[in-house]
Image 1 (cartoon, rainbow, N blue to C red):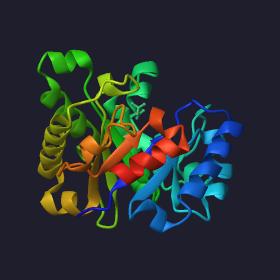
Image 2 (image 1 turned 45 degrees about the vertical axis):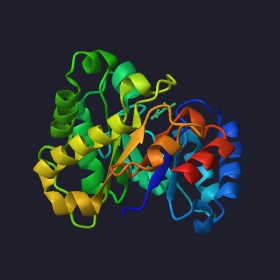
Image 3 (image 1 turned 60 degrees about the vertical axis):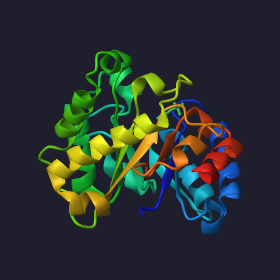
Image 4 (image 1 turned 180 degrees about the horizontal axis):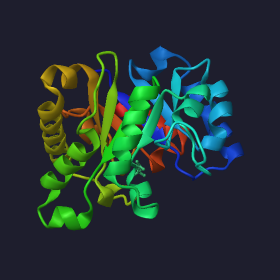
Length: 255
Ligand code: PEP
C-alpha cells in the first residue's frame, strides 16, 4: 500500500493575511504525524505566501508545494518563477499543467513536458502532473484516448531516476470547482487506464514504487467516503473544500 497524499490547492482564492491565518489553522489540526493518520499532507498556497506559510507549517506535519513553475531555470522571463526559487522557499511539491492554466493561460502538454523535465532534472521537488478531459471530450467518448495522449505528451522521453517520486492527478475538467462529482467507480477505472499508460512508458516496477495517482474534482467532506474504498486511488487534490481547515481535516480523515 502506498502512503496516501492529500494536497490542498488554495489557487488565487486567499490574500496573504487569509493564507497565513488558514496556514495556522492547518498547522494546529495537523500538529504531528499522528494527527494525519499516517497520510501525507501538502498545501499549495499562492507564491507570495509560500515562505511565511512554510515557517508556520515547519513544526507540523504539513508540507508545502507551489501551484506552478517555469520550464527554464533562470533568465529574462518576467513574472515567472523557477524551480530553484521554489526549492529555496521550501517547496517539496509543485503542480504542473493544472487545467485552469491550460484554460486561461493556454498552457499545453508540451509545456507540461518541459516543466516536468526541469523539475526532475534540477530539483528534488516532487511534480504533481494534472491530466483530465473536458466535458465535450467525455461526451464524445474520447476520454481514454485524451488521457493517454496527455500522458504520452508529458512523460514521453522523460527519465525517472530511482530515488524520484511523481504524482499524477486525474482531474476531469468538468468536475473541477463545479460540484459535479465523478462516479467513484468511474474514477477508479480512469486511474487503471492511467496506470496502464504509465506502465507502457516506464515499466511496472517504477510505477508501483515511484508513482502515485490521485484524484481531484469537487471532493468534499460529504463525498470523500465514496473514494475511500477504491483500490487505484492514492490520494486527493482538493480545491474549494481546502479553504476551510475543518473541511479539509474531515477529508483527510475520510479517505
Ligand atoms: C483543483 O483545482 O485541483 C480542484 C480539484 O478543485 P475543486 O476541489 O474545487 O474541484
